[in-house]
Structures are given as structure tokens and as C-alpha cells.
Amino acid sequence: MKLTEVVIDYGSSRVGPVDADVPAGTVTVLQGPSGSGKTSLCLAMTGFLPPSSGQVDGDLGVLVPQNPREWLNPRHTVAEVIEHTWAVRDAGGASGGGAGGAGSGATGAERGCEAAGAVGDDRRLEALLDRVLLGPDLARHRCGELSGGQAARVCIARALASGIDTIVCDEPTAALDSSNAARIAWLINDLAEAGKTLVWATHDRDLVAATDAGYSFITL
Image 1 (tube, rainbow, N blue to C red):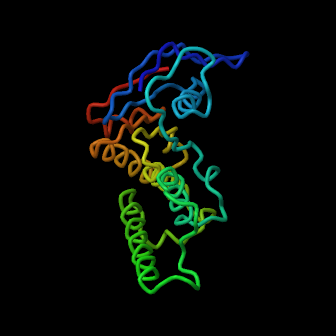
Image 2: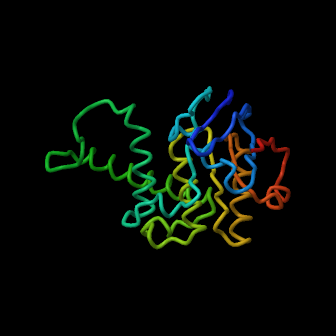
């Protein structure tokens, strides 16, 4: 992803112009004090806020929001959030318009395949939750029951489930205690080492310094 003279103009305030490269497969830290425009730039890099001028080239990222519990439906379970994301991602590859479910006319073989698919989905969900340091039991919890640290990791899991290679994390540790903040910071590092492209907006320089494995920086 490349940002060229990106400006976000609110009238009374303005962010930019920003020129920056976001190298693939690395962590790029977006740093600056509160109010410097980090959230605005994160929204521009994920398509939620088109720049007033300039351009963002390359594929847009997927957002991990600053206040994750506000972006998760409190009535939905974690499993429903992830499964819906998979369904949206896979919808473009769906071949037919029929339901194809195991209704009264389904054969035994069809029912067997559907059951096997359900088991496979459960294992896939368990593996995804494990990747973001969450236990399988959390899948049936409603999002309204999650702690701040759990909600942040569910949003990262949702980003991974989207299949989008660039994950833009807008201050994901801002409301967390030091232990949970460190978990998120190391998770960001691990995902980049696994080949994902991470943008990490933060004002916590000490946390960045503790996990920096050759990061690049955009300073506002």
C-alpha cells in the first residue's frame, strides 16, 4: 500500500499531507500524539473515510478498531461473528442459488457431508481463535460478555477471517492493562512474521520498543 499526499480535511482541522509506503509482510507503526490524525488515517487506509485529496494505492486493509466492543454486536456470539465473516468472504465463490441444506429431501450422503463440514468449521474456528490467543470455549460467548482484551483479539480474528492481507490496527491496546497490551503487541509481531501486513497505530512508544523487530514508521 502507498499513500501519496493524502489529506483529510475536516474544515476546522486537517490531517496531512501524508506520503508513506506500507511494506508487505511487515509491521508499520503509525505514531503521533492523541489528536494527530492516526484514526483518520486508519479509516482512509481501510476505505471508511475517503481522503479529501491525494490517494491510497494498492489493496485497502481491514480495520481492527480502537474501541472493539463498540464494533461487535453484543447479542452475537463470537462464533457467529467469525462465521458471518467467512460467509461474506466466500460469497463471491458460491456457485448456486439453492440452499442445498439437509432438509427432508436430503440423502444420507448429503447429510453426512454436511455433518463433516460442520465438524471442519468447528476445527477451523478453534484454530483461528487459538491463533489470536483465545480458547475454544469463547466461541459460544456473546460479544457483550467479552473483556476489552478479548474483544480486541476477536476483532483481530475477524480481520484474519476476512482473508485480507493488510490489517490496520487503530490503537488496539489503548484501553487495555499492561499484560493484555503486551499480548496484543506480540500478536501483531507474530502475524507479520507469518506473512501478514500490519499497520499499528499507537502513541505507546515503550510498547513498540519492547516488541520492535525492524518496524517501519509513519509519524504524524
